Image (cartoon, rainbow, N blue to C red; front, side, top):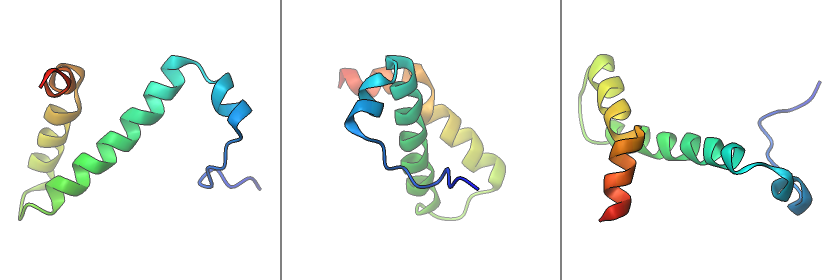
Length: 68
């Protein structure tokens, strides 16, 4: 069985990925960082954690942060 959680791409494999594939991977990493940050900020309901995550991870919010 293949282990899909072990990410050991070669340079050739990374270079073969499309920009959209790399952006997809980056979005996942960014979302994980945002989720971790929100969880450390105190007690919130699951619904509030989800809403705050979506608000921070969506493209327009990321664009505003990038402009700053």
